[in-house]
Image (spheres, rainbow, N blue to C red):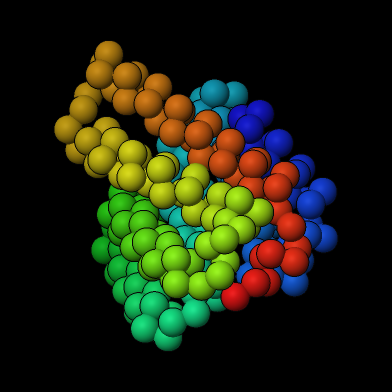
Length: 209
């Protein structure tokens, strides 16, 4: 929980460095991530509710669409922009279908999360290819989006299999807790990348093409 607070506070503090870029909504997203995690903890641990899936299921829509839009705005090649736009449409269609055929209150929408994570990985790969073809690659250490992409890439590469296994094959036992520990490690790595990106971000490099 602490790492989410740090990321949210840094995002607000460093806002002037990236307020004119596609990341201008990142502080709101960072705060929402903290709030959703807090709500998740509070509803289960404090209120002793049996499920809090509805909060996460709604959050997935805004979370992934934000990610897709950021990478769409930060790639130069039109083919990449079109691919990301297509993925956004597919994601929205699946989300709409799942609203109709499943119960958002009692079922964790794993398929939505997995598809969003998979599309995020593809978007990041296209961003890297795009980055390598421009002079931005010379100063990636100051590029906030590069560090955010590294964090997201490492997280989803590691967590998507865990998400599928935990929700499909693993019972609530020692193996479940082992996966939970690995999940927590991935979250820490992701947030550390976010923190590095926020600390080293330079406004003049974020707009460089």
